Image: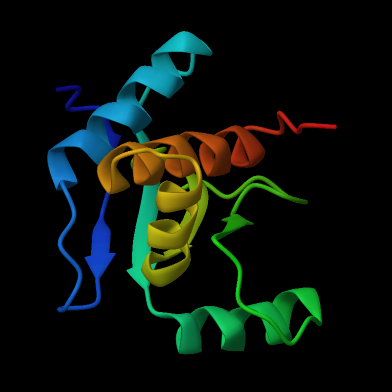
Length: 129
């Protein structure tokens, strides 16, 4: 595991996730895109109510969704005293992730990892069409 990559993970208590796999996805994705640390990306696993609240507040949409990414690097560069690049926050709605995993015939952990990578790419400025 890369010591230069910090991945604080917040999980609402009733959801079981594999923290090691999430951190590994972040480390691998950053390495693939030649981002070297120190870097911090936070991940939060929340319920539908919290995701709906965030979606209303930041997307102006009264609905839940599987993922939201919040960049910390838009606009002026933000550096901490030790020059850690804080890319931002990735928030997943666990109930929607479960539905998506079922629909796509995937393991829930694999869907979580896919979405974390997707959110991280957005934080890196790599968007899909």
